[in-house]
Length: 510
Image (cartoon, rainbow, N blue to C red; front, side, top):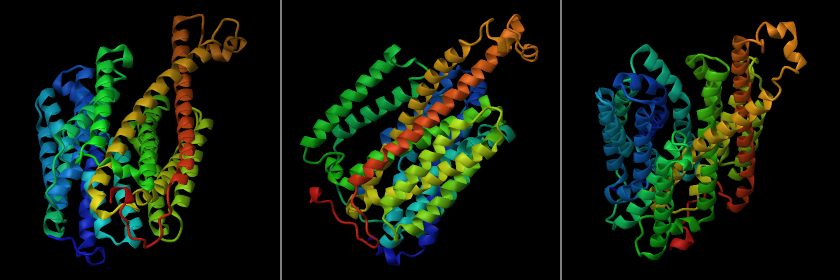
């Protein structure tokens, strides 16, 4: 079936809602299982390094399968692939909930990752297809809200489901969502054009090895002490070698798995670089803030989740604003404002203390969400604004791959920076803990931290650890502010996208 003109698509609202359900289901699952890991570990009676494979298998599977989305959609059609992905993801979720051993769970999570990999890029492709050019800003705002809200609310929802019911409901919650999305798309969505296309199996294999090796290294590096481990060195070597072979092969073969000429388009190239950096900031901050609130500032898990709500509110609000402004102002200006707003809101935590109230957390969170929303919608429009519709399937798959890899690298960088900063801060603070420090000899201080007793020294060490961790978290947030500002020069690479402008084919691929 041929896709009708974007201005005459029937049931656009229903299709949009169904696509967003699928998007939220996938992005939610990227973080919702994290808080349930300790309960799974007890249920399966396994060690911590074994239960982490529940996360690793999903991440690696999604990373390997994401680049395949463009080819499958081009050959079999976007609607057919999306329906198959939703059905597979929903069934895999049920199997995860029913898993009776860690081995079954890892296999089912791998299947869930494979099926879920196509959901986000296909959702973006469909929304770009069914909305006319002048309303694509609105469409990307809706899509961006689903992509960004899922990881934010995932830990809170996962904690509530695990505490109130069971860790298995972390997976069962996907069933009604998947059923509604599948039914609506089956009835109301229309198939896109598809055509036979050769499959570059060697290129796909090399890219899969590269991405899989990188994701394994990033996910397990913290547990294996990075390059002190033979496993990490092997994974790193495989990732580098396979990616090099993939690049050489793709540049020399007639029908490569990934058309590298896509990156000859300035907007698409700059958009992917910025999406990588944006993902570093988004995913790393999303991973750090809940842990800071719970372990250092002693908030319960549910309260910590509620304190992150303003971040989601800010994201939705700015995306709705950006969706309306993209047809009126230069999207590069919106991105510049978003970068500066995000940088400022990540600089605000530099004044935080352990004893402060929750107000500064919510204010900074709202600012971070607001800035990210202003970045995300215009960035999606600018990246695809000069690409012809025929290249959308492949381009959106690459865009999602870059987002996922950027998120994984961001989390790894944040964890390492946090560990090293904590150690350095602990050493700096601990150097002042001596019998010659008159502040420690004050009678009021001695009531809590008497350095002449074992109990007092233990209590003082706990406090030093807390203060060192707090300083390290604030250092990480400052680094994110710097990264946000570093994205500003990249805007100079992009061409302006004018309101109502039809997407043109990139000349390098004609």
